[in-house]
Image (cartoon, rainbow, N blue to C red; front, side, top):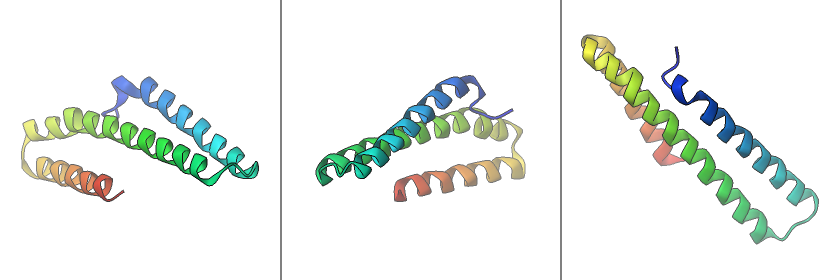
Length: 93
């Protein structure tokens, strides 16, 4: 079971909204919408993706990482390392 299972419906809803935003961006470009307006919507879409990523990361930490820490050993180190790398990727984005 994925660590985000309890929030799966919410995450799917968020992603569908983001998908709609991206389609809207495509339409804006096809319709030659003013650059700044398109950029504003790109920024909003990026923020929505970041918000979704934070929810996924939070669920991963609260489920997968915390369970691995309780078990200890190499599994705990691996899960903490994965989480650290994921956080680093999010910060670079």
